[in-house]
Length: 286
Picture 1 (cartoon, rainbow, N blue to C red):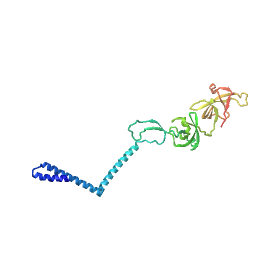
Picture 2: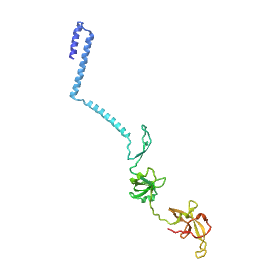
Picture 3: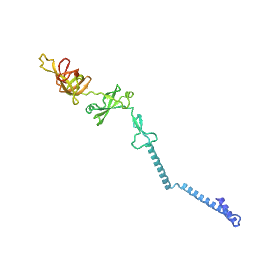
């Protein structure tokens, strides 16, 4: 400032004696004004620093900071929504999309199979499923092996396709080495059924009409006191199979207690034929 002031004063004296040019005087004059402006600006900034930042500037800076924080939070939300977290540990069985694919809400990405807590879902008739108590110990068969299981719950509704109620069993951890997801599991239950009928060997049955089964009964032609007691006439009797167990069946129908049922070889005998009783089964009620 002092140098420019001296140069401007000297140029004013020299311009009167025409010892310097007008341009040189204007250069010093404008340079002095520029320095004076810089000095005034510096004094203003110094005054602001001494007095402290104004409230308006502080509020404006706070607004900018809050705006940036909101932008950062928005980015964090997008990042959190871009990460899929599994609700349980397991193995990825299938991927439905490739890397970089744009997906929409609700679109399946992966198929995850839980292999740490094995479960078996067994559909039981409604009445027997009531008898399977929660937390009761059961035995299941998987691929020819028997494993311990425990009832962990049951579905509250009946399956509309199978008309059964699903019982969920928690399998023993040792079953993981012998099974895969989707494998067939068999649950064996004992049920007591009170019903009237007759036990017959399976070889005594033949297919009848309208979905029924039939058997052949040897009916004596004369009274039991007659010497011809062994002569019998074969009659067909329709029966309904209620239960099958190994080599015998439980039936009900037109068979009565004490009837002599042909046990084997019914394909060689026809109704109305006269036979002599030798190998017969006497129907016993239960």
